[in-house]
Image (tube, rainbow, N blue to C red):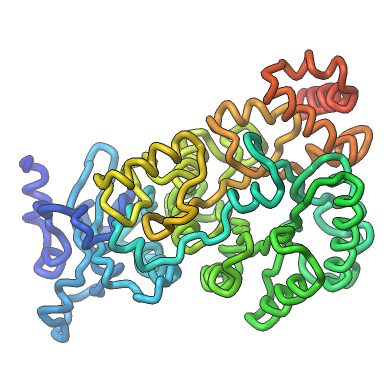
Length: 479
């Protein structure tokens, strides 16, 4: 240990010492959830003292050593076990037995990014990466209905699932909303979603919206010969209303597989996400991350990263979560942030910012686990008849400023086509309207699959040509 680290350890008081073990023998032995924080101390503490206070507050302790602790309670202490002084990073190991054994994700987050974000002992505290041991994965739901199930329903393979968000975001009646859905589906699109604030507004009653979407979907399926999916926002004021909306959709006559349940996971809460996963294991659970920027934006010194949010969504059982456009679209985000998060939730094993996360529940060295990872990296379906071996994938859902011109650039950055794209104005702003916008999106995807430059492909596809002209000009005008 360097002299600087020795001095830091010597600076700890008797309470803080109980939350530091710089010689922790094997943090990855299965006993601990691991986290890496960017930490700037506040007030009188140095970085190790502040880290010890964070570990105490996020496990068994408080601001003073108490006389009520026991020998066993001390075993539950979170432990600071590594420092990077140059980058102001601290590693903390949390005994995962601390957490509610009911597979409760909100309980974990209450510990590790709860009260600690309000502590005056820290000026900056951001959870950058987490690592779940296989012994912990066993306790949590993970996804049930995945994008692979959606692909099978749609009979769509080897390309992104092409979707849209109905625009304008608000103000359409239920019939007008359904008309936009119909136009997109007839134009060749696969997937339509409610926008995240859509609920039971007076101008668009929820029950009528569901009824008209069902009618529009049926008509589009008859006319195109292809199945379609709609994602309904079931977020609500209370549990009973959320379930009532789910049951309204289930009982509306939709074919199983043709609907998803969207939940505003941060504003509605993790309990709502996990309730949907447990009540409706045969439905795609669509996690919209509205308000995530309050925690994840890089300029915010407090909170957690997009990677952390996305990993917990997979742990909770979300079938898909919005992961950003990696700088290609309009939303804040970089490839380093968004693509790492996307790969982490869609693969059996992937490198995070600091940890390599395996989602295998059996030893990584087991030949079956190795085979699953290899098959998964080859983009083949895994865990169909052996779900005990690992936690199923969570699908990246991509939205925010994409359009047909930006489809290939995003695929190139993403490195695969295993995602759902939900273009809003990128479809509805097309000069020919929503149907032509959908056709342009399909044509851009076809050009990618045939490895033809979209400018060349557009010479014989007028909707794509119009999209290129319009969105290229619009992008220049916005600069």
